[in-house]
Each structure stands twice: as C-alpha cells, then as structure tokens.
Length: 208
Image (cartoon, rainbow, N blue to C red; front, side, top):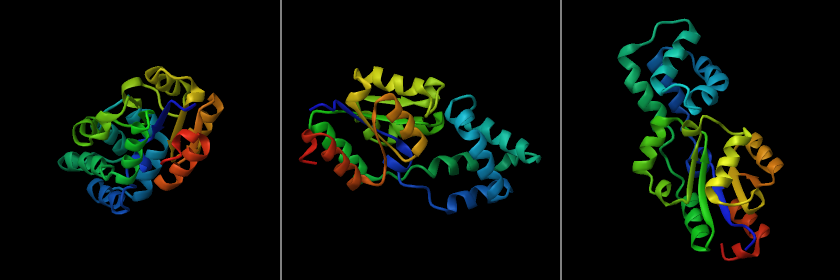
C-alpha cells in the first residue's frame, strides 16, 4: 500500500455539525445578536481560541468587549458549556471508517483546529482520540490549519512523507494547503464518499 496514514479533521468530519439551536442558545445566554457572535467567531476563533492564545473564558470576555457590552458573569459557565456541548455529537460512521482503515494496517490521525477545553473533554470521553496513532491539535502547537507548520507536525508525528498521507477536512482552504504540500487531500462529503475516494486512490483500500 502506497498510502501509510489517513488523517481526519474533527469538526464536521468525526463530529456531526452543531444543531442550529446552539447559536441561538449562546445568543440568549450572552444577550448578543446571533450575527454579532458569528462575526466575532469568523474573525477571531481560529487565531485566539483554537490557537491557544486564550482559554474559553477569556475568549468570551473578548466577545463582550467586541460587542461593547459588559460580560454576563452569571452565565459564563453556561456559555462555555454550551460552546463545548455543540461539538460533542460524534459521527459513528466516520469512527467506523477510521477503525477499518487501521485494521488494514494504515496509521490514523486526527488533525484539528481545536480549543483546549474541548480537547480535554474529548480525550476522556471519545475513544477514537485514544486509538489514533497521532493527534495534532492547534491549541497545543500554537499553529492552525491551513498554516504549513501544522501539516509538518502531522507528517513528523506519523513518520510519513506528505505523499503517503490522506487527509479529510470539511474546509476547502485546509484541503487546498494540504494538496499544495503533496498530501492527498479531500473535502469531506461523508464517510461513504470518503470510502470511495480511498478505494480509488490505493488498491489497498479495496475492501473498505
């Protein structure tokens, strides 16, 4: 088999998407408009929370500052819990695929932009986090996808060349960077599509 390792993003790949009510609940707890929360997340989540520059509590203090209002102190624990809970739903079909890949003799990895609070929960509660050969998480490395350093860390941890790795991620920018480096990258469109892409890429995956 030419492919030695398959890496998976967490959000919207190993996990299911958050339910729409999550953002509405955050809006109710913070007293802020959904659009304000989403605008702040787009501009800051990767570089502050996922990169590990600040923890979740500090991140939400910065959200309130961004919105120009005082923090709702009595709701802060519930705000953080709601944020973490949004990503707890695991896609069992993706996990099954990861385990099948491993049984075929291929290494598996998780490569994810992820805040520290969530990573702490996942390592305890989600078995596949303990089953993979490498876990590369932005909050621990201070680098986020699609920066080159995080992909280099993945290859180093797996002991593989870029061309021996397949990577599934839901974000096109992250896959574009992986492909530019020589990784076999695919935008994740569900576990069944991923199986087909692996089978087409390497005959060693024919039994998937």
